[in-house]
Length: 426
Ligand code: FAD
Image (cartoon, rainbow, N blue to C red):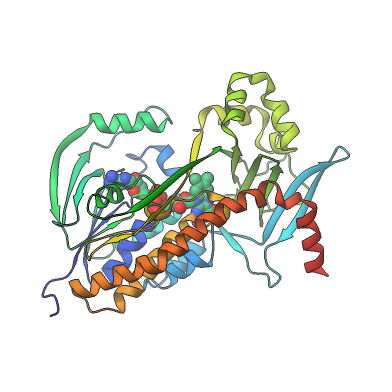
């Protein structure tokens, strides 16, 4: 029997995956409520800078296709207009005291990745969602409990305020201090898009025999910025159009157990990430005199591109963050709960597929839902099919992401890789 009222769907988390999931659910005619722990990232007066300022991501066909299939006219065009194409990797090094650059194309047919600012992508998706009359967005609402058997969820309102420091732990503490009373919300289905430390996953586990594996790798990351070129700026030979180095590459400074990467932004800057073992971070904090020599020895040219004083400042000011890898199964409970994105499969970022795979989860989930009748039984079948399809894929991309760490920091300069590349060219 068909439902007489629209399916009531809660989406937890308004990151890229949650926003796209809300869009798909609303286009299906569901009654959608989105609950997000943080403030609205489009409102810079209430949202702290370190929530909106974020890593640049490599957007690939997986993620692009999920937006293409969303049914939102113009969404993809708006997103793509805010991206910079990256046709390959640029490997930076030093030979006989000279800085070197070597371009390695991604694809013989010229296909490419696109650099996108996560915050911009998120804002475009939220604008699209907000325009739909059957979606309600609730910011500063933390999911504190969910019972997928009884189809109830609980939320605590978080007062919006600006944290004083860039330290995630203190931000969390500030939010906890501002707790107010809990509200209870009923649902037909809850979509957990609440990231690696998913509260939906945690509460779903109380009802599901869920296998769960979590690993931290011994690598931390810290963000840096290479500014656009001014007349006095340093630049590499491939610099062009106001960018300090080639705008159409993902730049890598590889080292055996660490690396520095730079991804172009539409404002002609580069968002960079320094990855290294935790012990390197400790030494750099402890021995400031060794800071510049460390960067000059390991990542030739980086200090000049970022600026010597800025390099130190950004290392000091920006958070030093861990990398987590999560596998779990199943990804759903009956017809009532399902997890997507990092909540289901957080992965190390070296394959550039975390968000892309999360966006693809949304497309796959709704393909299964569309193939079933729109009632509880149909939804249960669709969620089961989603787990069956997605779990092996998620585990595989997780493993590939870990394997690609070797490829990016060591493989790109290994004789085997260079030999294989020569053979391919031949
Ligand atoms: P998130 O972005 O984590 O969003 C989850 C949302 O849920 C947040 O807004 C959070 O506030 C909210 N939330 C959390 N708990 C609650 C709660 N209890 N109640 C309500 N709301 C809650 N991916 C790529 O595809 N390409 C890349 O090039 C790439 N590079 C990366 C580089 C780095 C250094 C890192 C760390 C990651 C990278 N990723 C990349 C991965 C990508 O950032 C993530 O996969 C993506 O952000 C996951 O999106 P999400 O919406 O699932 O989760």
